[in-house]
Image 1 (cartoon, helix red, strand yellow):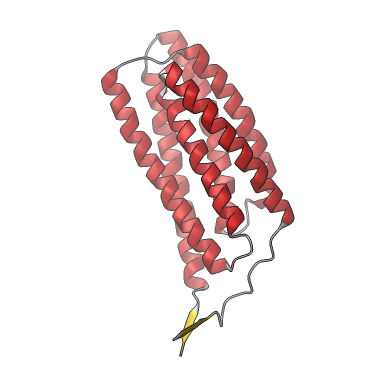
Image 2 (cartoon, helix red, strand yellow):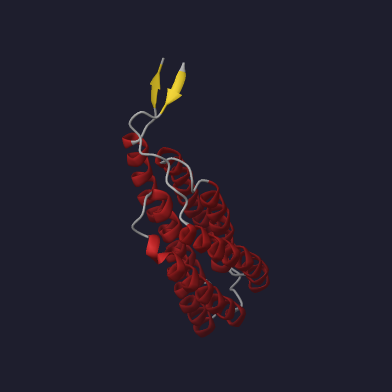
Length: 209
């Protein structure tokens, strides 16, 4: 039994501009993972901690995307499917973390939270601008754009939450932002999964004897 791709388009020629954009996004996300991991632990912020995991997940996803740039559409869609599932899983993890933080009842340190949120926003806006040109591409390209877009939106919410925590002394703004980020992960993951499944169906390799 041999596997052939009789009805599948030829593998995509690696796009040098997209490859460069992915490297930029990868470096940005990996750096911000460490910044938010340390800062989130110091500030006791669920939103920053969750965002640090998101940065790490995005860095891994960008690395995977770089590895499959020259692969066929079927295999690029397969990787995108895994990334979509990861995005959705992240949403559920953040919801669980938010519930735990609510039970603990420790409000975050607003100044540190806000400062890191602004830095993260700048980093994500740069990544999103770099990747925007590819947001209408296949599911693999779409997934990397959605990652940066969701992160930028989440960072705006983190900054607003820091203001809310500073003004009220309550941890609720931090929890609300974490839930918003979880929702972005779930909805973004659904979009990527849906498109990836369709691309896999349309470009499934044919098996011949």
